[in-house]
Length: 358
Image (tube, rainbow, N blue to C red):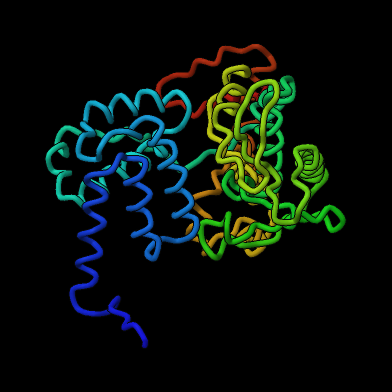
């Protein structure tokens, strides 16, 4: 006899939500959060669902045995202070938003809402272009310590391909083609469909990928579905790795490199730098968009931060053919300086001082 499927019957969804809310309210955070996440699965993109899993694992280390409704604003602030030493404010806010969503599901968020404060984020450009001097200092420090190998090679790959941190961390062995000198950004690592793409590798990027690939093989990442940067299960002198899971971030090593080199920028700024340099080099917009995986030219403008050197070159180009009167004035001013004459001029004088670039 067939058993009727009542999952679509009126009231079933309400019953299911009620049962889940009971679990959410009565179970420890680490169990309740996973149960809540399963109810969200149909509504989340794969990358978002995976990010939420990582957030829950991190939150569980601190809130694991507490009930959701036992978490106070003071405890959230303590969590924020602990996390600020190892990751960005944006990630901390994303993590804490899960507590907010779960308590809203239970109808209790309003009890601590007015006392909760997200980490303030800087109101600035979404990224900046790293100068060649900064880049040289960063990599000189990055390759000086074997503990920073992953952060060093991923940063080198990013600045030479436009690949973002999440895209690189989710590369699998099958996404790497050392013969054709390419990597494939898969749907797993791409933020949006438009970011799925194949990236060619120049010599620097190829060296980075070969080095990471050799490291992956040493860590027993032998199958096509294994990750290029395996997850660290436990650290120390005898680290244990799981090649079926990707390393989730490299902020700790990256920040240590910044401190060692006296610099300040974000991992994602290497991607911005790559895009900016292509724009400065005159690479056609269509090619830049294809490399970066952007939707349109308007979004491209957000990323292409022209450096002061490029702006200075543009200004110099404007002075290519000045009027004859300006040319004569510049010549007189330069001659005065060469002869050591006084630069001062009477009020209203058209005298012009020319400072030669050093």
